[in-house]
Length: 121
Image (tube, rainbow, N blue to C red; front, side, top):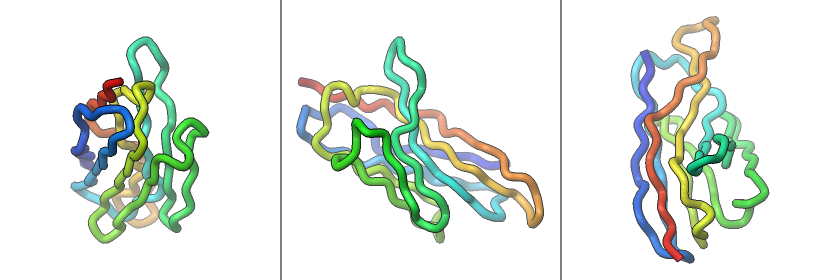
């Protein structure tokens, strides 16, 4: 089995910064893409940022220039540095990873439990 554990959420004032971390553990052969999603109350879950194993990244337009996604492949960990936070960034943030648990195995998607980010105005 594979577990994703997030940390780093909390309450911050507008303009502040937070850094989220998500560590994958368990039976892992390789991890392809890792990403961060968020879901605000009454809204659908949306992709915030994604990074593949080679390092290429993509972001939703609303966070470009403010958020940076990175990963440490040796630690099976993905990070989301969030700067210049806005009240509209308030949401539960979930990490996600495409994991292969054995050589020539299929890649399955795993989710973390979510961490709350609240930005006050």
